[in-house]
Image 1 (cartoon, rainbow, N blue to C red):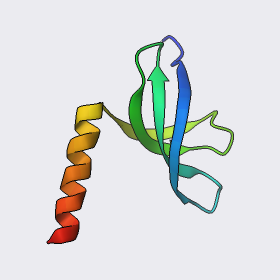
Image 2 (image 1 turned 90 degrees about the vertical axis):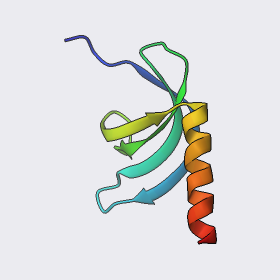
Image 3 (image 1 turned 180 degrees about the vertical axis):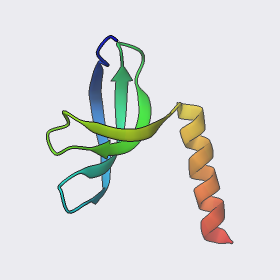
Image 4 (image 1 turned 45 degrees about the vertical axis):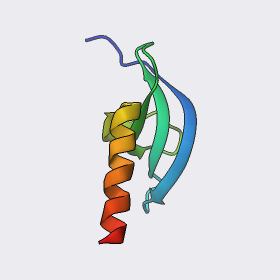
Amino acid sequence: MAALQFDIVETIGVLSTNKSGWTKELNLVSWNGRAPKFDLRDWAPDHAKMGKGITLSNDELDQLRETLIKMQTN
């Protein structure tokens, strides 16, 4: 199996940090040389290991933002 390649293009924000130092982060990440997408997942302190997460396109992130805004107003 080929190694997974990634490049954290931009760190948008850290949402939380657990006792072991892993952080849940929203980043802009390029996976295997592809165009960067928004990525939400847990990362080890040195970013050498990662947990399961999700990637979102610009449109999906916009829809998520709209959904969260609607939740606040209800």
